[in-house]
Length: 223
Image (cartoon, rainbow, N blue to C red):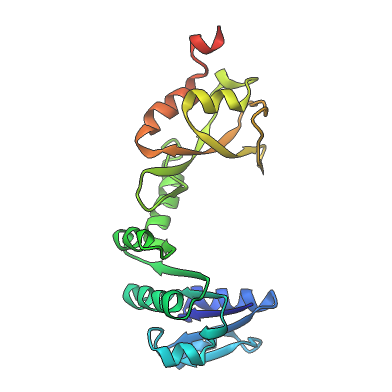
C-alpha cells in the first residue's frame, strides 16, 4: 500500500525505512531537505519538501492514493491539522498523529483522530520500571474510564479457572503472560503460579480489582 509520512526525524525516517523494507510505497514530507539524509542511500521512496497541512504538498506526496498517513513531525499543531486533512479531505482510511501534549491527545482521540501521546507513553514506561510494584496502565481509552492493566495473580487463584477470576474481579482478560510467553486465554484456562493477566479494567475500580486478584477467591466463591 502507499503510505505518506509527515516528518523525517528519527521516528519518521525509521518508520519510512521499515515500511519500504516490507514492500510498501512510501512518501516522506519535511520542510528541511537536509532531514532526508536520515533515510539513507538505499531508500527507494519519494521525498517531498513542504509542510504537511498544505494540500498541494500532500497531493505531490500521493495522498490521494494513500491507504495510510502518519504525522510524526515535531509540531503538535502540524501533526493534527495534517492528519485531519488526510482523513477528512482526502479520505485516507488509516491515520495516526504523534502528539506531545497528553491533554491535546485526549481531545483529538475524542474527535476520532488516533494519536500516540509520546510523553505520556514514555512516562508510563519509566514508572513501570522505577516502581515495578506500582500498577500503571498499559493503555487507556480517550475518556480515561477504561484501561488495560498487567495484574499479578495471587497464589490464592492458582488452580482456579480464569473465568472465576474475571467474574469476581469484574474484569476481561485479553492475554496471559506465562514463563515469558504470551497467549490468548479461554474462559476454562486454569491459572498458574506466576501468571500475569493483561486485563481491561474500569479505571476507578483498580484498587478493588488489585485486592481481589492478589488475595484469591472470597469465602463465598470457595463454598
